[in-house]
Length: 238
Image (cartoon, rainbow, N blue to C red; front, side, top):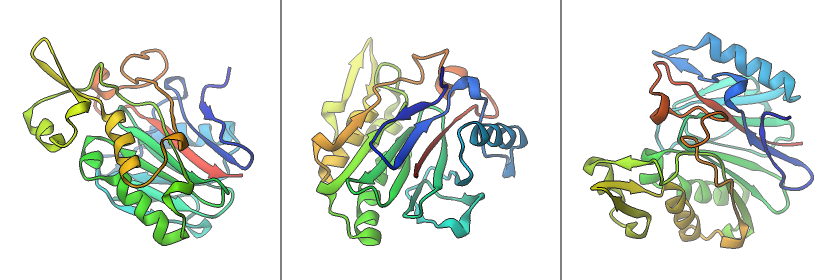
């Protein structure tokens, strides 16, 4: 069985997420490249015929960069979103409860990937990605496709007041159970996509919860490991 979650978006596009069995893909730890993660990524790239790639060193921000084959096999620091129109170049970032959100137009002439944790979502990295796509590629939001990968779902995303107050505009995505508050982050991502002009019919949701799928995915909330154990999300034109 293929251990990646391979999304099928038609000819010329590959996107997905590694699995727990592929090993931790963590890029850096204490500001240094994490060598076990580097080895697991190299193995994953070889197994999945990924020759050209760039990977984010996340900052849990809303910074987005356009990259080309000139950036091949490099770590892009302090960035949580990537875009490219170069065929064969795979955009990569790590997730361990945060959501990977994949973007591409119907013509499949560019791809984008965003790291959507609660910090990025509260800063509207989704809307900023759609705006960056318009600027870089003159693509109208209604012509854009978006897919939400595995991440922690409302069933397990419990928050305290400090996080809750950042989502006061999303009351429909907030629920209380047994005096605990839970947020539907994927639901907020969808609402932000719609707010940015992406059509509901152009959205795909994996519906996978990293916390629930203990055998398939790492989950920081579940495992609380130090360093973080993480999956690798990727998208590329082929």
